[in-house]
Length: 309
Image (cartoon, rainbow, N blue to C red; front, side, top):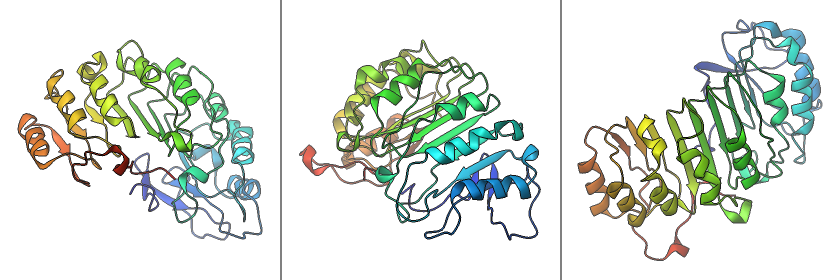
């Protein structure tokens, strides 16, 4: 599972944990710096962040990964966002930021207390990659950002307001968009209509990868994708982690050709053996990920998405 272990690399850089007593340290731009508090830490995240800026040359930092930001009980990420954006002028080279790179052992994804992440985009016009994990109280306003090439929201329930804000944003350089839509129980209330702007090809002119994953509406999404104009210019498509059944896979195969794709990610699914064979035979030149086969289930109540709580 994607949230079961920490990343080892981010933005094509090895991740290095920052600690105030860490010596020797790599060059500021040679790694992605991970800042995270241990449970019961004597300092808060704002103090850790200030130590980081004092001890590592902030002008050379290219990537930052924010892990656990709370000292004991779970708290809002807002102070961390405010601390980071307040020092944006000192980080002119920052290209990539991951907010909430937390495993489920540290905090379940749907328990992470998020906030408005719009300031991260407005404060860093040079940012190329933004990843955010967590959906509770997550907010985003439509923005224009000319440099962002990758945007990723990982959630057990992604609010429709965030999906609509992404759709309403001007992101002319965006090449990769990944949305873990999640389930209604944890706030994942986006509808097919909310996804339409990503599918009709009128937005995101440079998009080459689209992920609409981890959804209880995976069959309906697959049927919409099957006839979506945007697919013709994609190199990779991710419909994984959700409740995809033979119904959705049939819609994909009976829709527009997918043979131009380099990869089609369907892992964690409810496909029959016959459908998996049919997919593999129909897409011989495509890397199709059919791992984590949960078996065909007629009763939708028996199905579940990969990441919810």
